[in-house]
Length: 67
Image 1 (cartoon, rainbow, N blue to C red):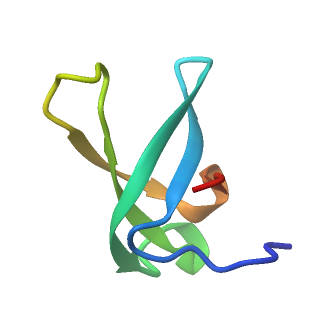
Image 2 (image 1 turned 180 degrees about the vertical axis):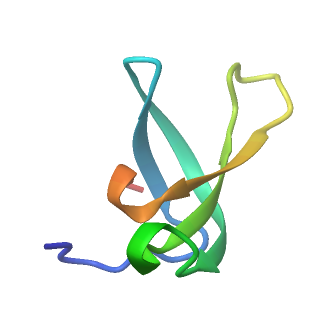
């Protein structure tokens, strides 16, 4: 069970290709996932100087990170 709800602007951790990465929630898309799972749009920078990449990911794949 999630202790704190995820909001736009929250820093989050997620796993991609076996690596734990950090991103920021830029949009709460709503209950669009399987069985109504909440979906979020995340911005992630692959390198510090790179433009952020944005993609959608289900809430159950996200973990709140320290801000």
